Length: 250
Length: 284
Image 1 (spheres, rainbow over the protein chains, first blue to last red):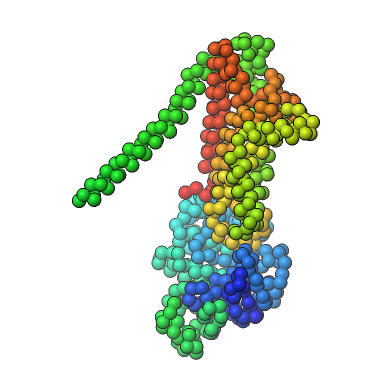
Image 2 (image 1 turned 120 degrees about the horizontal axis):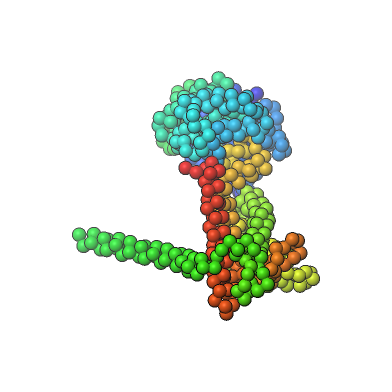
């Protein structure tokens, strides 16, 4: 049960986006990947569940082991299976064109996990888990796009949780939300980390300080420093990290 | 202050322009409908829409144009289904499989734009040439094939536009849940359902109203075809033939046929809108 990245290099066209990344992500913790824009945070995240495949002119070298299986060199079927294990929450919430209920049930349906009553229980449980149940109970059959953005984001999270992933990737999951919704999603992550390993890309340093257990600092496609949150925020070893944390660049 | 004044004039002038345009558009629509209704209502009767042409139908005697109604519905129904079956995979291929800057996609879109603009008489002539080459005669099948060819570019370009505005995140979201490409396709179809409906309505409108393409390829017959190899009448041709008659009564029947044609298109449009609104889960 772990994600291990070894000698990962990613090129898009002729640009070397990720340079020799080596990383072991801790289990059942919140790992925050921080760094200035364009440093490759999102690319790294996309590589972890092979969504990078849909990027044009991309070349990936190296290995990413998820539960001991090298996902970079596995075939289509395995990739589909892999993606189920790794939930994704995007920057902008993206409800599927269906009802609230069908959104949460979608993953279970396509993976043939549950049906009928059991499916209903799973949907309710996950809506409760993200704190949406009280807000949407009674209008489960209405289109998901009618929810507010913050609710949509939590719905997307519930949708990811419904397929019982082991990891959750979050790409700036709160940056498009209003402060109150953002707070809700953040709190949610804090409660979820007992069960899932969460890997989160964030632009907001303060957010990382609030919720991270482990921090990875990237700069221009390289990992400059990584370690427990305490150590990175209070006692960074590298000059670049110090400068970034003090706000010298962003 | 002077500047404000000129801004106000600008505002007023443009408002007037917009109103005039609206009036022109509505005026045209209403005068078309008025012409058809006022001239057609005298001739329209249950006999007209429920009977085949009798012996002296084209000189003003008994009978109706059921043959043309059924023929048009056959051709439109079959070609719409065929058109959808052929177009959806093409649209999906252009938008999901091909890369954004793909040369093939560019050329394909250009080709469809050109086809979009080709006049229907050219399709008719083209279909006729092919049929002569293959030794076929004008038939229901010929009409269906040519009308399908005629509406495929409309289908593809309209759906393509709808699909291009489609949020890419949805693809990532479904993939991330462990969806295969096939399952993703189903979500894409749901998302673009309103686009498909619009495309279908446009295509039906073009298909049912087109006379030139079916003139050589579907022929004309006073009977309802019972096989794909038989000739069939169509409403636009029925209108055309009756309108060129010197007998006033027959000319009025042409307007009755036009009225039926208009009503069919209207009903289909309303049904189409109703069903997309009813079943689209993506409406606000």
